[in-house]
Length: 319
Length: 124
Image (tube, rainbow over all chains, first blue to last red):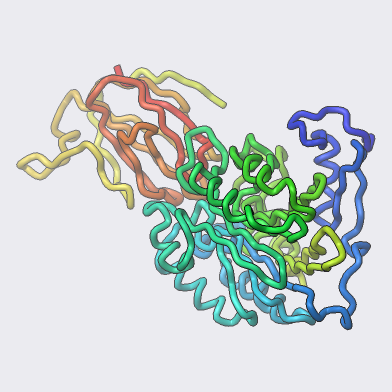
């Protein structure tokens, strides 16, 4: 396979063959960069990490996603146990994360009992705060009322919000509500207007981190892996020197860099899903029992002020 | 994706157990039996949900037919009309939802959790 872009279907500078090649690498902790039409890859370990002495003033946080509490089929009969492994993993990090992001699908069926079980598990997570955004499994039946009651205090509309940490501006978005037949994820007019307003007064040098459940870029539209109006949101962030987009939903790591924007999706703590186009549908993927923890994971994110990209390290739950 | 037109013949069928979704469009008669079991002309047809798709994706039924959806996928889905004509709760595996189509027309519907799943019921 050539490293040169041949077919630019989505006009995003990544052709399908090159994308799949890149995606195959990503699962092992690799960053793919498109530069001048050429794909390059870097092992995550090549990205300069923070030395212990330089930790002061920098920011470290973790991302977990797709815990699907309530799921109990063969792909993983005990999602609470694997979530616990993920929590233990984060608690064992050499530097305590300042906070943890959960990028959605907290529950499997938006049930009270599922949210209760999740809360119980998260009590053991050693961090200052957990910031959530909902997945489509969290807003079934009640348009997200239960989710917002539990995790959306102080948020706007469907549950979006922003906050600042060590000079980095974090924006939590909701792209799983009011989905149209045949469509992908959607942010909606009200939320887009809010985003535009939210970043209006920020200096362009402010690092931005956007987190939402469904990928904001078109990973694989055939399976609903994309956001119809994601490009519009990214348009409001065009002037910023460093934008990182952290998503979940697809239950596998995928990364892309486009100009100043780095996209990264996280593994699930519950069950893996097939790579795009490799199965008839994006359902839970059964792997041999002793392999399960190697396809589930957490992400540790370090922000280095002098660098434009976040250093993201994806760690599986395998001991 | 399969498309199949299903011609429904007048048969007497009893609507199976219904989970969370509830029973739309059927009513209890004075005798306490579901209406569908009483009327000789009543008809029912099943749509199977599996692999993130509704099968058959397109069905044609006679007015008065009750359609029952069964989720055989290992992930929850909903049956949601694009015009608010009907909407099921989340159906987990083996969950069922039924709706009686009393008015002719074309009813587009989809899964509100996975909106790429679209289908339709044509009622004549």
